[in-house]
Image (cartoon, rainbow, N blue to C red; front, side, top):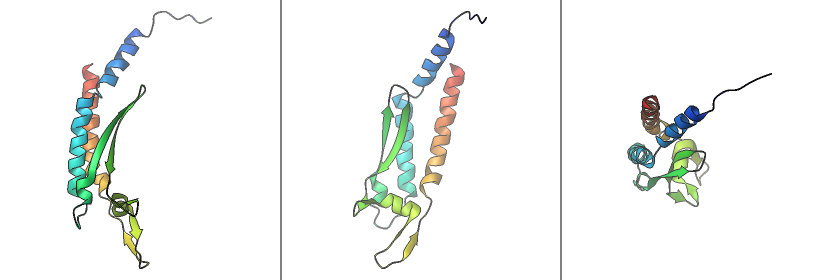
Length: 123
């Protein structure tokens, strides 16, 4: 026979507080930093792609996420993706991609994770 005493009030309280650390202000701060880092790191020919970065904060009942987007495209294909992964040309040549997105965002996400962890530890 198994008996259980008590409840999960403390755990639920901790999880609710932890969820609140991902408030819009913190994510907004890191979203702006991410857009600046991406714009700075984007390879520039005309400079158009670098100016087209944006971010969105998506919140559901279960989660919150920070996503980055680039609206510059050519024939419907995102130029930021072409720059990142490479692409073929009309002449049949291959242009090698440059990994610029991951290095630009790595310190942003590291700082965000560290700040979130500090908030959790304070709770």
